[in-house]
Amino acid sequence: MAATLRMFAALVPPPEAVDHLDGFLDVRRAAAPYRWATREQLHLTLAFLAEVEERRLDDLIERLARAAARRTAFETAVAGGGAFPNAGRARVLWAGLDLDEPARTELDRLATGCRAAANRAGIALDGQRFRPHVTLARLGRPTEVSDWVRLLDSYAGPRWVADRVVLVASYLGEGAGGRPRYEELESFALTPSAGSGS
Image (cartoon, rainbow, N blue to C red; front, top):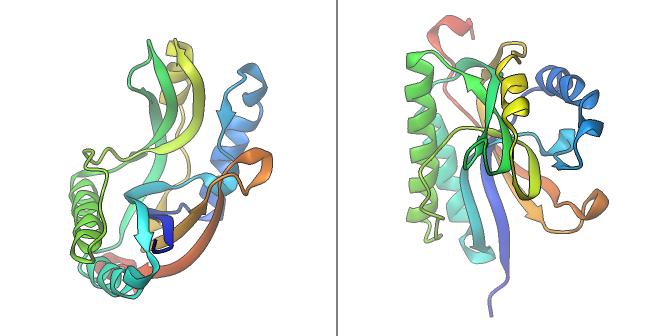
């Protein structure tokens, strides 16, 4: 059987945005025994690729580079949050992104382009609707988290420019505390926006 890799294409907030979010969560994590994401795991998944055959990797990289170049960089911030599937029976706590209308459209098109790139490279996708979020914690069983959702709703991090897509390999159980270990394989630049001065 062909070797496969578990991967995802994502937006990764810059260190200052991760520092701010991590600082906000750090003083609160002890209040709940959830499986909290580490700072290295904070990202926004554009396309999740559960099984990538190594022979398809070069094609995937080429297609993701083209998909990223078709989209324009946009400004955003990690802000707000919620729970999946809902606050009454949550399995996941997440933070959202603050996006104006052009940026939201650009993000949706970027996710669509990344998923199409994977599909054209012969890689199966999960088929779930794209819901932009940064996973903060996983809960072992369905839990009522309305207080956490209200707290996340009050959060607003520093603004940053989303200007690249990162392709990451995820190795289950190889990270600290049995978490996945992430390895950044490639980075793909978005087209600079007209107002960025680049």
